[in-house]
Image 1 (cartoon, rainbow, N blue to C red):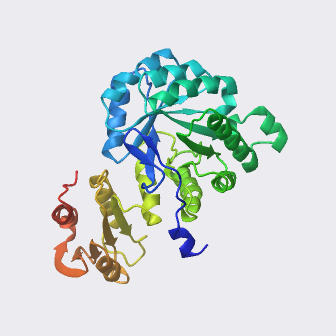
Image 2: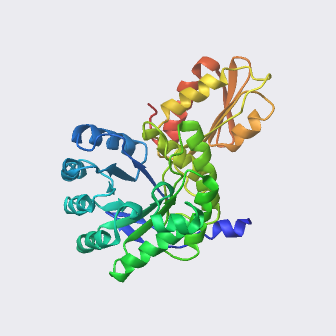
Image 3: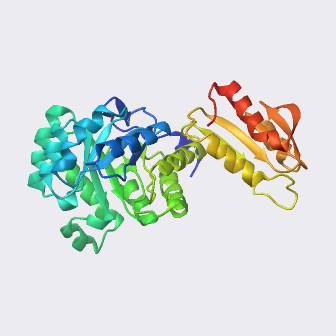
Length: 360
């Protein structure tokens, strides 16, 4: 894969979730989903606000029943980012969610019949409600499962294109697509196939990816490969547990791919026998104190004099440590020598000067 291809991100047709543009020339958008009971408005809003604080740009909530659907209006009133309703099986809940004012819905064609999808489109179209066709390897249409011998990449792609055609036949084009699998190669090939055949914006993700470490690994590989090839308009890193942790990993992927410069990019060495400061404690503390910072800053935390001064000098701010001491670098300039016990406070003070943002 050459650099020229990476720089040519595929331009998809733009759609709008509320005031957030997806596709076109818009940045790759970071999404998440609550793990609360949507019927509990207070708890759901509190979790969404936590997601907003760390940079989530679109949020999805589960709508398992009528009570959850009726809660959507009040939830939307209290949050600042677009709200998407996640619908399975019961098409009536999609109709109700749209009428409650959500910005978009996600439906899985594998568990809603085509004639019911037509009913959903009739309600969504006049309300400018986006529909995400969410293809999932775990709930593929039965005929495609049989035809392809399982939830293969080709089966997922055929399902997506079949349902795009269904919506287009009704004159509906406010469409976003996702083709998720817990198997990374299948997910990558499915997105490649669809990207080559349509210009609708694509939402990338590896579904059921597990707890933090395996989810970060699978998502970084699957999402990263596609982004490198210019494919993808929104992403979600699915992690079992608190969804707030998804956002940091998602932005980490975008930073690593040089796609979006947002948040602190902390570079720290792996430590070895030459390290003479408690670099692990320093790194963990800085990550905690800077969690949710949206301003981009490259921060180097280096434990010895081998690569430390060079890496620190390349960063916006950094420390190259010695025995109980460290040299503070700022914008490539050696500033002063500081004691190890003062590392965190000095760094936070300097970061505040550079960004105007005070760490936690």
